[in-house]
Length: 257
Image (cartoon, rainbow, N blue to C red; front, side):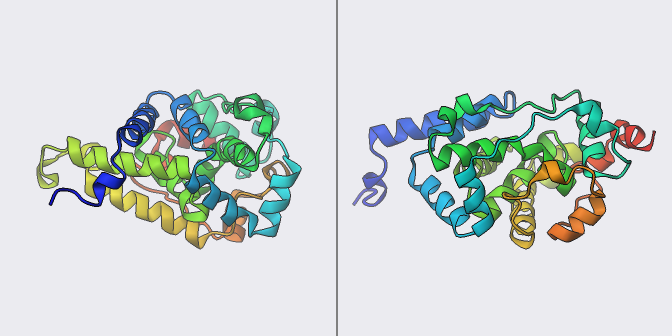
């Protein structure tokens, strides 16, 4: 009988496209540029059309997409000078501690100068991505990345990030060779398929429970108290464990200084 249904989608060109996208998703752990390119490759896909449709049902998101409002660039010193506990101060301090460039996201030229709505959505998703780390508490390394990615998937089905979730789960399953009960370190346990699946679900639930994050004008919120902002947006952050930036002693010391 054969694979009667799979044969309709497993044509050679479809498999080649999938493998190329999967390669970009896997490479995202070493170079974020791979994920930017992955999302750009999906700009004309049916999943992107669904993502756009979901966002355009929200009046504030639809207006922002039409406006093509840009993000940043951010003045890291000015943000760091904001009151302790504010979004901006926390954002600048956490990224500085990790040695990350606060303006590390592609400019409009990468996204065809925001030619289409899909281009603008991709641009804004990655320009605001690190702010989602700050809001959610998810760490900025590989342990928390899938959680924060899943927030955007939960809110509006972003295809590039959704595909990254799926590939991460598949890899954790394929690469696993030791029962979770035999893994001694928290870090190793966090890499298991079960832990990745739980993290994806937690991120999806966080996104579904929160108010729409896409249209928030973050530049106007940098001076706002972070806890106040989280309460307003309906976000309960991750504060403990390997998946939280709160557990990083260097970050904790920098924020307390």
